Picture 1 (tube, rainbow, N blue to C red):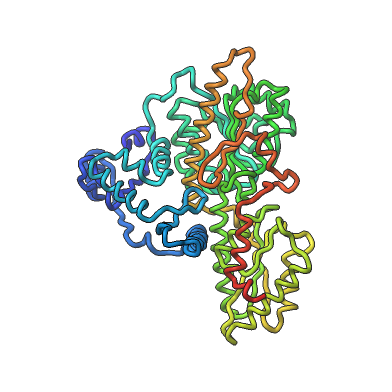
Picture 2 (spheres, one colour):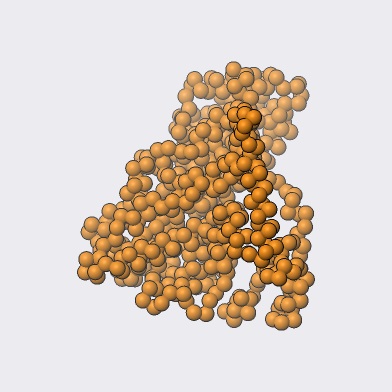
Length: 521
């Protein structure tokens, strides 16, 4: 593998060795042994770095704060519901869903892994891990090992167009890298559509290579360029370009605009045969506003950026003893980022578009803050955060809220504001966004191959793509599901650019409970 990397021009390699790594004969694999092999056999200058306990330290990321909170709530619920007959539970998580697993069952599964390893049944050991484990391992191999001969025969090789849409989001480039490398392994041709549909109409389309996307995993933003232009700008010209470049499939990575674009293209099949190809949308947006999915690439990266900023702001507020900071976040008409950020940072109040802001609400909030500060020990009040989504209200702006809290809160507390703006779009993608980008992108490519095979099975003159072949990949509770775009539009609030239902809205009650608000009424 490393020899092949050198042959194609790659000059930097990272080899990660788990502290308990073993070979097929159960002999331990040490980092120094790897170094010796790479140095003596391949002539590669190699260094060893042992991370050790540095992996245990540092600040907790956003989800390391949110998940224990949700698991703690579930654990209390389990205790309150318990009877002498109910088993003890381990509180875990599968995809985005908190789960209960009988403790003894979890212990048995853990022991079964060790037993399978001791029996050298490594396939079984992998299957006994988390359901995602095998997929992630396969994903690593698919995007890290370049084969000499493509897996697909000549007649099954595709020309796959890849496009970014909407605002940049962490994980866009990682997903593109995974898709490109899968294409190269299979013998497909990955085509980058630069600058969205605007670039498509300008014929700004280039072929991507294995080595060309090598470093994209860690890059934020959008290497392909992105904007909000929809194909309806000139649908006929878009179809002509599809035909000109002989696209066999289209993969769009983006937010609500990508979903809307997919809907337009699917409806355009009535008039343009060029759109009768598999088309997929991989949600990627910090707003996490794509209907029917609980997770979008980039939302975790932005959530961590929000948490980092709020930690620093809260430190400043606490130093002043009696200061409230009103923090404005991005998110458009979806309050996901503000709500989950409030839960992760311990904010006292959160304002989101889904609930809006009115005078009665503000009156109750001012009363709560004044009561809370009056109960603090004199001279030892903590700084507090109020998080407001940018589109929570067109009247009660961040500036209005700040002035109102400052006026009404005197002399108990002062108020300041901070607008985070586009800082939430940038930065290095989080590990979660990178890992999920690879997993979801590979599922998109498999989907494309399957639906292309179904199309090829039809007579050439009457070949028509089914509605299922234009779909969005979604994370729903504890599973990944494909949703046809025509089905998804039934669950979309097209005016407000978000889903009609949101799994996270119940979190607002938990935020109030953790601040002690119910007990202060």
